[in-house]
Amino acid sequence: MKFTGSDISVGTLFSFVIVLTIVEMYFSYKHDKKLYTKRDTWTNIYLMLCAIVVNLSMKVATFYLLDYCYQFRLFEIQTPWIYWTVLVLAQDFLYWFLHTVGHYVRFFWAMHVTHHSSEHFNLTTGFRSTVFEPLYRVFFYLPLAFMGFNALDILFAYLVTQIYGNLVHTQTVMKFHPIFEYIFVTPSHHRVHHACNVRYLDKNMGMVLILWDRMFGTFQEELPEDKIKYGLTTQPEDTGAVNIIFHEFIALGKDVKKAPTFWDKVKYIVNPPGWSHDGSTKIAKIMQQELQEEESKSKVVGNSVKTFS
Image: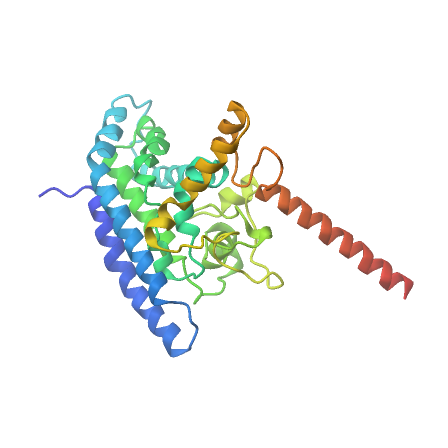
């Protein structure tokens, strides 16, 4: 029986992370941290199983599409250590781009939102997969095949970065050395990513390297004065697993239906979450600008009071 990179990815992730998850569960119970709830954990596992089913159904198509595009590679890297370094770096950047699209295009957000729907943050949150991502993820990684990386190696690189990405879903680690924090995605960075605080929305998209976020303006540090609240800005009333998967598609459909013009309908699909034709709701960037303005005004007023005193 021949195992593909996807098979190895699922098996390795499950066996490796499950041990650490049990340890974190024990730590949470022992110290009364309340990091886990039974319902939320079972929902995470259910969504992971759904993603596995979709992954398995797409694995052959994913492999053969990458393998087909590999025939048209533009160049090849002969030196092994350069080959793997470039592959992992390129794959990590393309994941950052895929992830960013998942936050800035509402159609893709409707699929990615499942991963952000939990009001808890622990290692099983990493299992709370974007169920339908395997249907389109391969198209973001096609450039790797054209760059001369074969299908199995691309899938293996995804395995490596995915393992790392799952491990940063934890509150049991605060911060690492500043140099490590500057270069790599850490639990602190990813806690920000899962927050629904206005300041933290759509930040820290990286899987392994936080450098992409620093380079492209999507980085936000975890601040002690802005305590993180996990989940969505508006949590669905029905937290059942099925509704968690489809609730944003339902909301998107309603918005498209009420849009007065064809182009407004298109904009609801391709614009960031929160966009509305009548301005009744706002995208994250607008809310963050308003927050900055409010904080600037408060700072000016505070300085004026001190000067007057």
